[in-house]
Image (cartoon, rainbow, N blue to C red):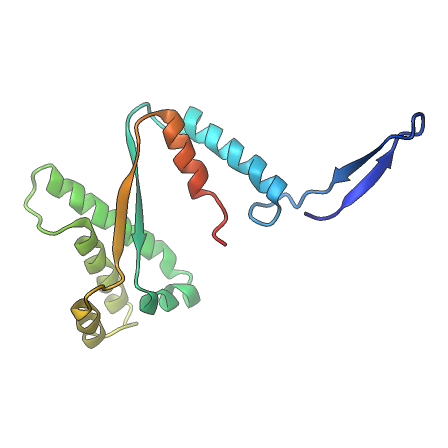
Length: 162
């Protein structure tokens, strides 16, 4: 919030508070709530078809997050790695001969990206792959059967990260 003004009616003397808004999301609870509702309505009415949807969340290991934190231009390539893994997985599910789970495919795509950018070497890749829990994860259990449920997922996705 960016403060407020106290407004007083000159006739009756009643006072009200007029909240100033930051007009951006995440910083101001009132602005963010309004934006989240508008976003949800847009998703429901304009974006989504009336078919079931699924939310898929991709996670990379903490040790690799520094590369994306300090080299923001890599975030686009990271998103494309997730898309490529998902597309390969869907091809597998429809009958093409690709092996591996979506998490394995995502892991391969991210390591390929970081190796191609010469940010890591093969020894680190092999070390991480030997870990019991590599830190790569793909969560796809959230399903939305209706537009209203998909709107709820959309509102969840736009929430503040902190």
